[in-house]
Image 1 (cartoon, one colour):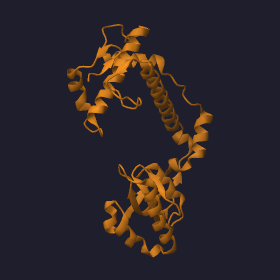
Image 2 (tube, rainbow, N blue to C red):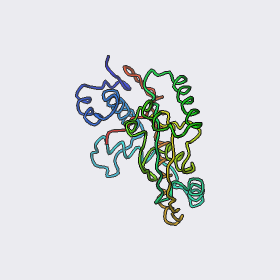
Image 3 (spheres, rainbow, N blue to C red):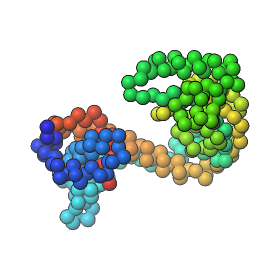
Image 4 (cartoon, helix red, strand yellow):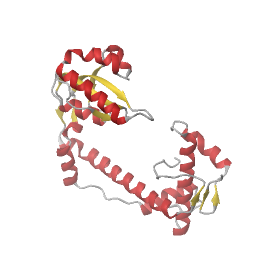
Length: 253
């Protein structure tokens, strides 16, 4: 079935040009087709609004899309007080030099898995280990879906920024020599985490990180606004031949 966007039928040639940019995606064809749909929706909107590139010369599709997004997706730069609140709320993000030894047992969440049953199983093991922490390595070898199971679940020393945020936050908030008394969920699955020795880092001053915070907050706001704008355009467009549940796919660079 052909994919048609606002009376424009996407061609095999367009897909051939687009596909190489999506080879790392879980579903390269779906990702490429979604990007093509979003590009067409944006180009159609640019045409309706009469948007051209800044130079006024003949512009490429990418230049027209860039000009449209500059015009339609605008977010304010956060002020000093907003940045300071963020700094005070998340001090661990601005601490350097901190280290923690960690071991874990990973219960991987795979397609089709009974998540409730997996949580019950992981919770039972966690309860056993809270009673008998010396058995952690044995339980890791028998139950963990991570290659670290071969060394009793040991991940060695982890520094700030060295792992996914949910794991990192739980690890550095827990006392040394403890097992975190809850399951920690990340995109990899469910974790039981044992904390070894810890080395405290030092908190960077607000002056050192204010600009970095402002840039990160501005980028996050821009990304949210862009996502909302794409959803709006997709919702207004006439699209057939593809299931497009959201506007999450990146545009062609």
